[in-house]
Image (tube, rainbow, N blue to C red; front, side):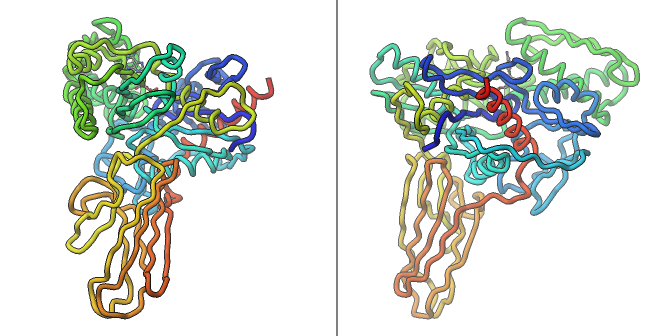
Length: 510
Ligand code: AMP
């Protein structure tokens, strides 16, 4: 249990938000940033002698494009090595290179400095579909920033807590709730049952690389083509011009959620040439239709995983800034056969709000904490390879956590001296087609084949996995917690955490 108040942090791909439970007022309060805003862009920038965070970093992004970092998802890809997609991204103005073990590293110029901050208890949210190593990386980044991360929870589940608090006030009975969370860089859906202050996640599904920034990218590409068509010059090589186009694209995208036409109007975009263009909502939808349909496929797979019918859903809750896009709402409404979408919670703040409730539930001396119980699930199947490169699932996806499962295996060769345990996550039947989390070997006494080895998988409340193996006759034992690699910790995440720690300290001092 944490002592005193703990904060809830929604560390979003594009925006972050922090909240704390206020016992006197019986509600969570969003903590404003130093600019007085309730959400903060997930941006960090480095000038020759300054480190800028949030709005200040985003505002100077065009003039200092190569030293401004955004896109949290880049850094939290976990153990996945740098992909072709990442290598070839031309739209990122900062340099991405392959670092240790091929993990992505961002190059910026800054006089290196490490800031220590005092320990602060926090609950941090992650996309539900984050894998084991991405969760671990988030926890590590929090620890490096001096935070005491008391729990990692899933974003849609946090949003459900915020929803449940409202429903609880209205004394509703059992509800089946569908959370549709489309943010800046990730997409998550969760199906939950809410009854008597208990939440049970039935199934979760998602895509850790789908969100508002993909819609921005489509728009940027469109604008680059239009600029080339009009002026016969390619601006792809100019980080500064691309940054300005990206900012204009995001703004136009937001406008198109309310108006049917948005104007792009940029002075001297490239080599002194101005750029003016009108973009219709229909054009924006056409540019992104395949991505919107991809979202719907994920929704469908969540229902088939949960073995539930869409007609059993009482409320469809929209979370994440991109859930405001009219076409997305229209497709969702059609899927739910005309059902009105629940819009009483703020899609930008619901996740931080829920994280603050969870933080209060884990803290001592906090008043009037709602008595809510949360049962979450693991998003991906976890298992190990057995003979023939077969994925032997130990914990299937959508299993409630925390959980401990043990399986019995046997050696396959006479006089075998070691067994190797390869731990994978994913849904493919062929083990090596899944994501290899880690592996270890266990010494066994030389004996005829058939020696019994017991393997135990444990997932804790944060969704982090520990695997142990024991050979029964000798008692030889080994265990590992799947760890994140140091090279993977993204500077941006750490800097943002530092920033929030300072803000929450200020708030406490008030
Ligand atoms: P989140 O990660 O939930 O903060 O969502 C941020 C994403 O939502 C960003 O990509 C924003 O551009 C996008 N967004 C915010 N407001 C709107 C809006 N009105 N219409 C479309 N996208 C939006």
